[in-house]
Length: 450
Image (cartoon, rainbow, N blue to C red; front, side):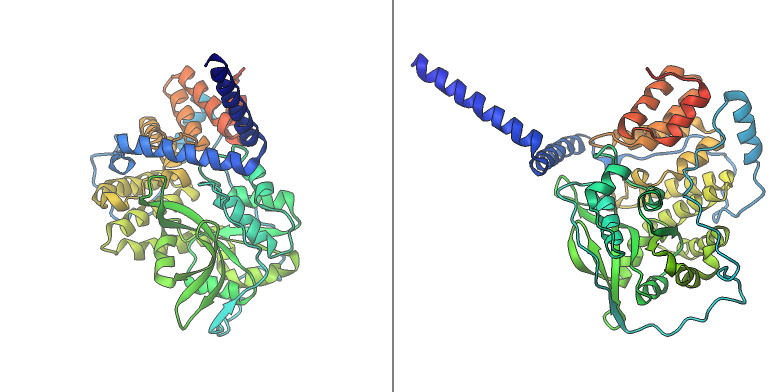
């Protein structure tokens, strides 16, 4: 009997050893196991503390009425920023600005007199040449997969893992920003790229008709780790359209290739990300891209166009659309460095948020967009930054979001919590090694994280 027990123990030990080696050295198995563990963690945490029930209420809102459209006014923000820099020695601004699009030559610059009149679009177009890639059982891997697909159209021979090692140095990072994708294209390929906001359906069709696929970021409802339909941000590569049946053809790393997305569904989800779009193109196609964009090649003009678009969305009676209209307005004003009015726009968005039905609340929105941190921080509303970061991180099954740690660190330092700030800076770098804003801050503040 004792001998049988020893044999059983040896077999169990051998099984555990083999399992460990398979998980450790077989990437696909390791990814699958980690995915299952993440699903279990999410299920347990979300059951205990449903994230859709958590509400952020800005504490530092003025008692004066908020202009319902938050008009652009003369802002005192520059003086506030200057005062903060003098008192706290912060870096001038965490903007994570995209790589500047090369200034086009005079012949390419779009002006009112040089914009080419659009030609009638074909009834339908379907581009070939995109190599489909899925997310490989990874919840937050749509960005590497989609960028790899987009690049493949232009002859790039890499894959999602090459992209991922650059844009997601910590694999479980919840989001990749468009500027991070642009950095990859500019640094790792011989192609050009740019992104803008305030796109429209006709613009996407025009790019497609000119044989230029488009990567878009949209809000979609997909089954999460609990099997529940829930809102999340998602990238797709658009490779075709059909005017008669009114749908786009999308390469979707989660749902599959040649996915048909009705125009109306597409546009509703697209609003969640300010109608942002990203194109990659070879250098010989630069003039075509500029002609398609027209005046929106100029970023300042693009912001003005985007503000006008939010006016239209604000007229909606749907609370979700109104929430995103104010949120988008805040994000545009942040880009214009009008932090005072941006903060008011975000206040209105968060005021509307509780009126959205719980099952459809976009509670992950701060995973993907950081505009409220900018606005509240540069208005000196440090408690709001800290509270918003706390809520964002606490609502995650795995609190992995370098931007939230960064902004919480900045605000903790501003209120004199040096130890708390240092811990958050460390967490920011843990989840995104060499994260530029964090490195800049700790260097300017003379902080050693060793």
